[in-house]
Length: 166
Image (cartoon, rainbow, N blue to C red; front, top):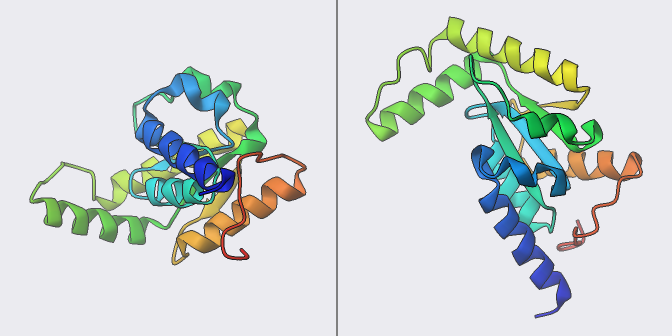
């Protein structure tokens, strides 16, 4: 166990502690902040990047719920908006509710999802963040895109570690 191992553990703990909008006061400490509607892969991507040693927080975007004001204090080059198609999101949400044995009115309805994605994109434009489509994308591929963007933008991710030559 070397320092890289402990950095990964700390980054994974950070991702868990800042998942799904928890502890918005810590957004400014994140290397990456992911935003997006429910079921756009924010948590799996956060955990994977945490495993890579990146401190990630994620914020869910939902209709009629304001994002935390702390989000607007984050460098927009560190914010990544996750989007997908309404059709894919509708299928994922329908499947999820079926698995859970629940029914949330509107949550998996096409019109609701379209509005939610439109409002999410509007906030992403307001923030000036990078938008990444999660449609038919692997978590690893999206993570690589984020890490390359940060590198190209000259932003350090002091905690990031190289895992398996990636």
